[in-house]
Image (cartoon, rainbow, N blue to C red; front, side, top):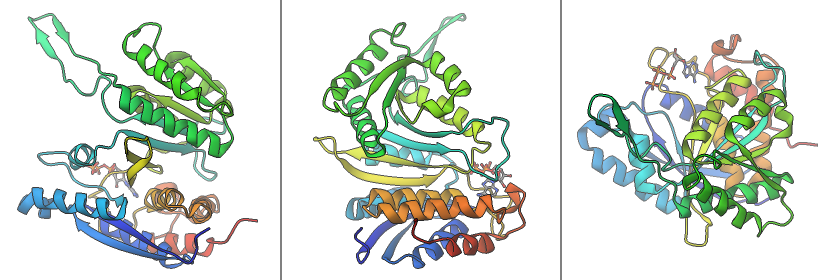
Length: 341
Ligand code: ATP
């Protein structure tokens, strides 16, 4: 583990609780045995109202320089900053880990430890469609070779790292051209990974089986909209949509990650901003993913385990039924930053 190195991180600051989340991440970073240097970019609504183009240019320059960025929640006014940044950074794959959290109440008693890998572009989300007369509407669904291959490569590399198989899921028996192309590309990539088992499941069957036996699934790769649906359902299974983090990736021509952006799932929470009570778990889990991606795998695991440990011990913020302030929770996580074993 390259412990003695300095890690440079572009930090895309946003609105609402963004500053408090960032303070929590900085506190945890300072407790690690490496130097983490944050390079802030102001993406708040006030800054964007003044000069949105300059904000996005600065965000792009920072991630291009440092290769990794941590993004905090931003308000959407005219344009969605997430959409603008996804297009400008050419993010094509989203990785969303969803795992059961001891200490969080749930209606589902299975153990979920899932990595959802989703094509971040295309599917039905590219075209809002159009009305044809009063009674008919159509839209175009897009599946492209390059992002499909990038998602598949990412999924199989992750499967190899986690020593587990990969399930691809779509409706290829009905959407024969589009989902058929996706599955064909996944199969092609699977042939390069003889050591990683692969099978394909129809998306409706996957949802059913996942609810019955979540322990049977670890890495799932899907086209855009299926991954979106699956992510929210999986979050419902573990009892919280706001506790997760996700990673967005762009790739070079060889299929290696070029830029990586990590962000917490939740919103700006204006109702509690500035009160010192927000839950920084998702931001800390995003930071843990960033550490793992940057080669500090041991540290990423330690941060992840520390967040889960604090929640499991009920040293949590009010939204999870605890009584900790953001700072107290962060301190509880910091106390648990100990190497495994
Ligand atoms: P946005 O428009 O940015 O999505 P929002 O308030 O409409 O903001 P969320 O930010 O998702 O949507 O918040 C929904 C509810 O969850 C709010 O009551 C908010 O206070 C709460 N919430 C969101 N994030 C957190 C957090 N990190 N810690 C504690 N409560 C949170």
